[in-house]
Image 1 (tube, one colour):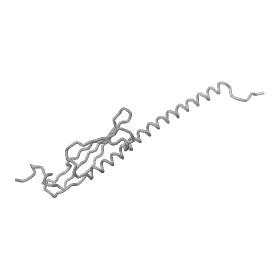
Image 2 (tube, helix red, strand yellow; image 1 turned 90 degrees about the vertical axis):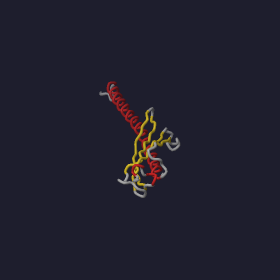
Image 3 (spheres, one colour; image 1 turned 30 degrees about the vertical axis):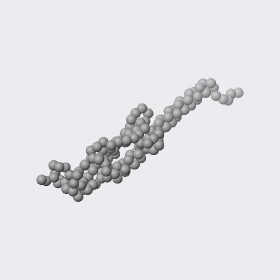
Image 4 (spheres, one colour; image 1 turned 180 degrees about the vertical axis):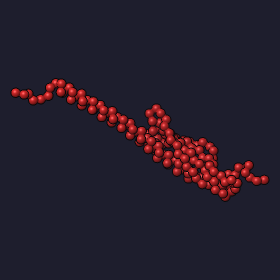
Length: 144
């Protein structure tokens, strides 16, 4: 009469295979959670960058060739330490600049945030037109 059931060796092999599978699943799950947290912080930084860039594009009083910067409030930064740095500079001027002509400004914006012990950042650039005023014309360009 044959006995039904598993031998001790079969149980050990099955348990080992199951243990390897569970460890693999848990390490994959831990990696997915880390990636999700990293992407969440990056997505938040992108949204903060878009918000700050829109504000910079609309502000006609920004000084040129001056570094600007600040920190984002923790309530909109999701509790993550984050901030920005920007610079407005003349990108393109007419060959012979005169008041009333169009010029092109460039806004460079860097968004930074702290994730773990590392500082991460990304940059955005935007361009906007402006009408030249007499004070915008370099003194060397003005005819005597």
